[in-house]
Length: 300
Length: 93
Image (cartoon, rainbow over all chains, first blue to last red; front, side, top):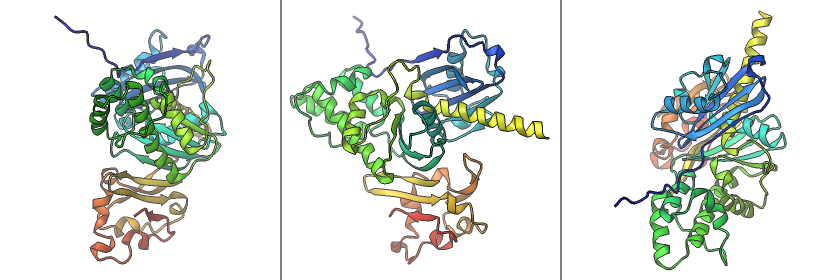
């Protein structure tokens, strides 16, 4: 007898393309590739405008993950990576993006991407990544003024959420909504360490807690952990959350409650995705660097 | 830019902060030679400014790497903050 294996952690990979843009007529094509610890994204801009993006899972090999993300974004467009005039790599695998002209840290790229996505009013960005989280303060141009990150452990990050999804057998995209289907907010789980949280969640279930209540306690613990990071450099409006966890309303609302500031949300009809902020920022850097090179070339 | 390098773990917060707006004004860059653990490097940041950074390999080990210069190691003042002319370097612990 074979048992069907559900992968509750598996989030939807995504490909998006703009309608009505003929890339062959574009004056410039720039690409940003964000190879993160859990997900990889590629964003393609034509003349500085969004043309296509792809968000996929990072494999065991950074160059292959970069190729997969770019391949996804360009699939069916007839464009190849050779058509891109400037490519910027970012994320923890940024130095291993094979076709990149330059590597830029994800801190600078997230700030720039958030500035593009949520407007020039954004001053504080929380990036909740796969295995780390960062708080970034920036100016109206998306230039970083202050940043802090914690990448020492994966507690309270996307990967931790994937583990909880699998442990509790709840599809990862349902966790946020289900964490509010409770009578009363429980105390946060005492430990957000990915390994300890898993055993604590199992123990709470044994003690008679409902799955939703355990989810609430975990989301709350995760929020508490990032709030301590936010508190260290302070929050100034507008506040925007990037990374995969930005799509988990259970964590987002609890962070908002704890810091007393509401995060800027993308409009419901927006094609953008907070998970691509890093790659989008990288593509914008690529566009700016290409223009700088062209200007320097014209002046010479 | 205020750059915080380091981490927080179960035993506390370990961040070395470099104010790159101050750092960029400095020509001496004595921090690089002053640190007994060679934690500092002068690198171009994302905006092409040449500033001091903490070596990537040391960012998750600051508690251990810096402990020799803390009071328990016999120092009264830290070599890096003393050497830093524009007072751009601070420690969180």
